[in-house]
Length: 559
Ligand code: DHE
Image: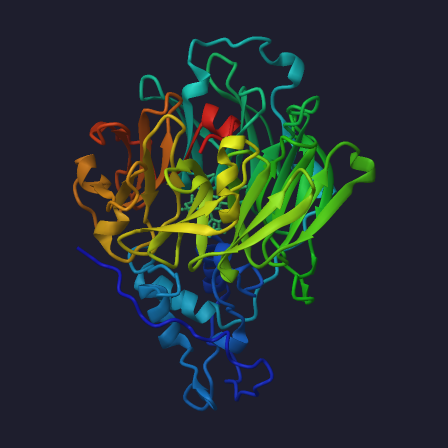
């Protein structure tokens, strides 16, 4: 069994920018072929956290002034700077306790050496992507008038799960009633999220490579009816949901180029691109402010667009796209993922490097609060429930700390008025076995609260999920070892148990067992009441499953 080893953090950000260093004259040599290979690996594995221009966000800054070997043996006045090829190789292989995961079970020694040399070179800036480029990439595969006018199959669409098959560049639609794979469709590479049309008929996917697809579930078999490229690196997409605008527009956010794009919601025909380059909340210009989470408001015809590097939250009004009105709300860096509070008035978004959660009031269009939390909040969409002592709370796990934070959220219901004094405070921290949580989940019909820990360095923790009893939150959670329960033979790569998702009835919880690309992975289903194993889906098509999105729960933001 190969365990992740932790080494020290970079501890670089604290060094003054003005410090003058004796840099090695040149970065280590690379052939053109090596550079091309490293560029591809960097895009697939590193750019998400460190940025295309390597300015850093969730991950550290990796520009050559930090990474290149120093001539004087890697020592600088006032501190020790130990980068250069050897040190970088160790960090890439074994990870750091700052949140960098180990790659010794994903990349070969040769590839690790390649990456250690590559990140000492000047970053490659990919080309920009214009509205014309987007239009050129647009494929309307089935026009609207050639699509069914009613559902042509007997599947219970509300209980379908859209499952990302990350490294296969595919999406599986799984029938939640029968647990059978309905169809596997080609998508962009490493679909990050799926979102649902307001009608529940269309699934929208967005690949890390910027390819967005729209899948129509009314055909006898799900069919991709259009696709378009948003740029070269993307993470988020959502549809217009406000009354009168249901499914009219789709918005997609890109990491590269840093911008958001608006399309027709049923054909994906490109309409508009808006750049997010500009000033950070600290008053500095940033050339790569990436679009992180996006969500459609139910309160107004607006999307909430969270810009990572600037810490600015944009409320984009989609009623008049020619004369686009945007409200810009200052919050904190670096904005990442988030979800609605129980009332669906406040959008809660993690400002992960600031150890804060920003709450946006979508009714007033203002920042309601910046809540201090434990290290590196990572909510996914978070989870809402009524706490026995503190009333309505929204929960987030943490990548950097062994707790789940419960934040008190406001409610207009008179029975919760007594909890008002606690609003926007962390009222309880639930103890986890370690850091490395990515996703939490509960359901209005459940008494359980589920949390994963896939980024924990201990194999056993990363391969398990933890279930809290919401009636007694002081009790330690029950550990379910998903890898063992799957019955699959142990593999070299850690099989991370990731992203609990409920079914329509709220009585089953689905967990992805995310193994290596050539290993058999699985979707493991538990009975939510008894916590007993119910089903293991191990079809050979299940390659590197990660996110799962139940149609009904995604449409109605049930979490
Ligand atoms: Fe995610 C959500 C970005 C790594 C699985 N991820 C999100 C969102 C963003 C984001 C901005 C919110 C989208 C929204 O709601 O509109 N994720 C990033 C990264 O930048 C990061 C750190 C590095 C990268 O290179 O992508 C990253 N994410 C991962 C993974 O490694 C995960 C575990 C596996 C994978 O498929 O890549 C992963 N991210 C997810 C999932 C969601 C998500 C499953 C949606 C959660 C939900 O419940 O809505």
